[in-house]
Image (cartoon, rainbow, N blue to C red; front, top):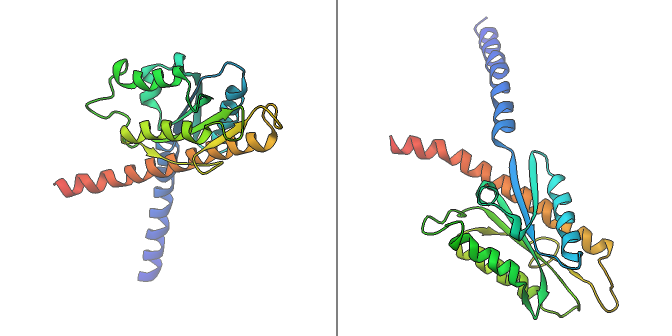
Length: 210
């Protein structure tokens, strides 16, 4: 008889706990991803859209796609992850993208509080030739993110997704778009894991402070 009552109590506790767990997943599990880019020819814009498609493959995610000059401070700080894309200009990022990164401080004021700390960051690039500086461009973007204490990830390639748009590979092919989708999906996955990890740590930190 005692074991029967114990079993009933356990079942009741499980039923009561389930809605709370579900509410936590829906209420706190939503991931915000910002995909920002510069594009003149439309190639980097196509890659940005493919990155956004990959983000949307992950449940409980929302994505904002913006040209770098249109991003607001609210969108920047609300994002759990920032994916930044640029065409390659002389083996480096476009000036518009560099100006956007500079705006993090001079316009949006991320320092000295490091307001982008622990956000997930990633990069993608498009370039005319195979060895046109795409990796250098992505590494420059990732270096700026690391300087802001962000958590950088790759996907679709060793340093991020990239596409070659001239020579024997005019435009962007499906394989390159697929690499961009892979990057977007991985960014959303990692951002979700990071956010859940910090949410689990918060009760532990509060309890340790008591």
